[in-house]
Length: 234
Image (tube, rainbow, N blue to C red; front, side, top):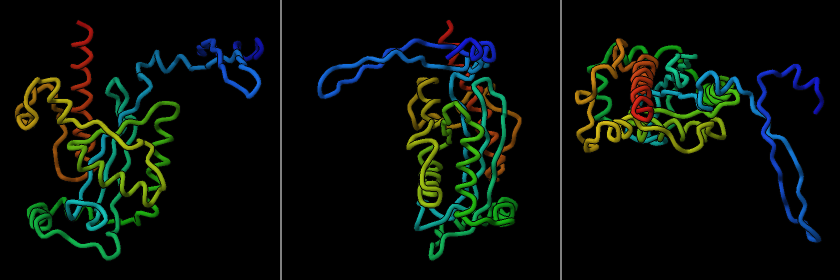
């Protein structure tokens, strides 16, 4: 690694490391630098990009029922909206429709119409989405954010594994309700939106259109994150 490398990479942080391993005859150690772009620290990204995801379905579990649409809004730690992704999906072959869920949809005619137009196959949409996540995250770690994450992540993980082969979020995500429980020091069941501080909310409406709700809850998460770090700084 010569002087030209550092001359052309002024924002590079080099951390000396020594790697040791054992061969059948002896132990060997090799000096090797760990190279990190220091801009990642200066931008306050904390090596994570938060992907707020909201989904709409026709039933309670994936496979037996279908995910109808999903929206995703990517934010950095500072609360900046980086990009969005949205897709309406064809239903799974042979899948059912849950009667209770479909009764609920009867009262959401505008949202239903919105999620049933411009349909894509999951085979097309899910690999495209996974590649989009990787592109937006770059060298940072993509983190899934949901509300409730237990529901949204279950469908998204199923669809990503089946149709894209893997999940860029691994097998976990942040649940906003659980995060609120720890911040407000309340019982989990008490942590409903009406108990949240007003400054956590954005002006974005909750429409049951996946992308709208992904942006809305993503902004809420970022406002919560700001409060969380303020507490740590005290």
